Length: 279
Image (cartoon, rainbow, N blue to C red; front, side, top):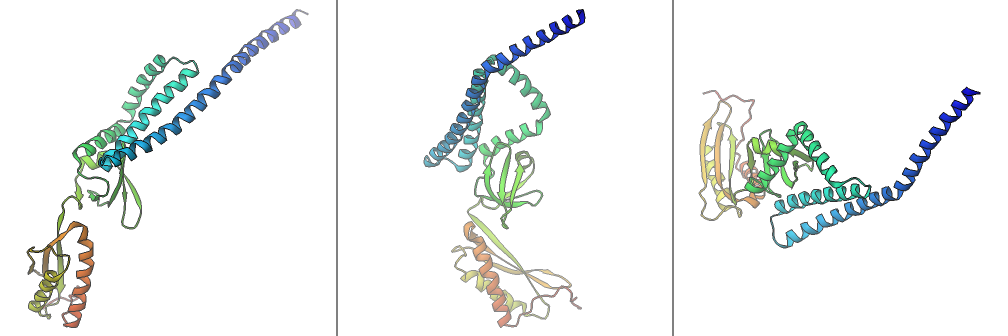
């Protein structure tokens, strides 16, 4: 009988504990629902604000790169405020949360130093503008493409074959970057290789005429056409002039086609690298 009595007492005690837990959960459920709804609504509002702020910055003719970066930073700041408010609804004091967040931030900061470096590098890119959205760049690793976004952690490029590449910001500030869009004027440099049997003087005349008469050549720009290499395989003619940056590829394709057509019609033979010239 004593054993049954003790068992009954233990069961009663456990039932009391479960009742207390269930009662607390029941009381907390409305707050949990409210907190979740508040966070979801706040998140949606934060996204709308990010879009609105970016639109306003664009209307104000703010730099596209800066507008995109600042809108992202503001979005995450609003998100942190919403998170703190949601936890406050659950009864968690904001001061405790901020203190915990501070400690957690230090721990995470030590663990994610590279990400903090990317964030700092993003700010450096925005301030010093080695490149901006819309520029065509090439990295030290010979990755090239058009800059589409500069975010707090990485920079996104679109390649010429329409691939998206994400590069950590830190690698763009610690290594050299070639910006093909920075200058308004670029030099177009062609290396045309002809055989030793071809008339090099006539080839030079044709190349000079094509560059001088191209609609893309900047008016008054120097046109240089000279032999700059005598290889055992070919005679190399350097052809060079200046073109507006936004017309570079139009001129390149146009000129290359015209060179091929003219050389073919005048029977000027391009070099074959499998043929060695014998002096």
